[in-house]
Length: 240
Image 1 (cartoon, helix red, strand yellow):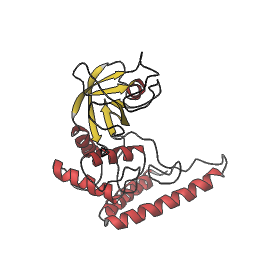
Image 2 (tube, one colour):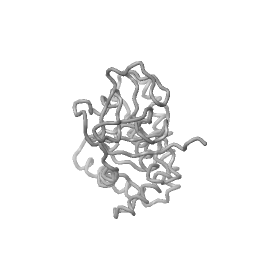
Image 3 (cartoon, rainbow, N blue to C red):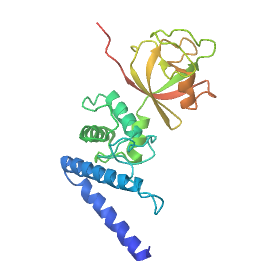
Image 4 (cartoon, one colour):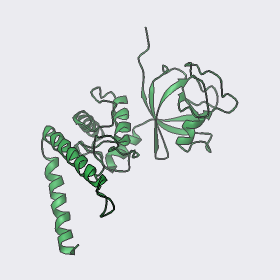
């Protein structure tokens, strides 16, 4: 592509992005939905196009089956219309901060944007409802750091305190007081894990969390043995 055309395209795209962010939230959400529908149409056409050209890249947004990426939170900018596993992790964290309207879903909707804005106001950041690097860093650093260990070998086949069979493959955490089934987000060295409380413990090393072997593996925590993780807790209501 001619360099002058490329520069003009880049400027136009930047101006369009800025203009979109000034639109009301409802209008942005509607435009995002239209974009997702259009992307789905092009993807369907591309699937039948054979090898005659490059595949159409639908970007990071979308709500159709297979359209939402399994992206790690913190690796891209997030805003209204985006979806993916990073958005789901974001929503779990925001929910743990008592932003009650946030749904624990993979979609970045208006309730997520409102919660992000509320967090940005509290943190003294630019209040635009967009999770840029500075906003993500503030969210990550707002999670308390707590000591964790991991367990499993020698205990496989036993029932956990929450009634599940402990296996090498089961992903979960043990906690002394959180109700069984409580949702938890753990962050370790830049990686995130969404999981649930499945057991009681730990009862050694002054640790507050005990990860199953599979959970530790997902976070690359196994070699550490004992280390601090950042935690977001979504306590499940206790049965009366």
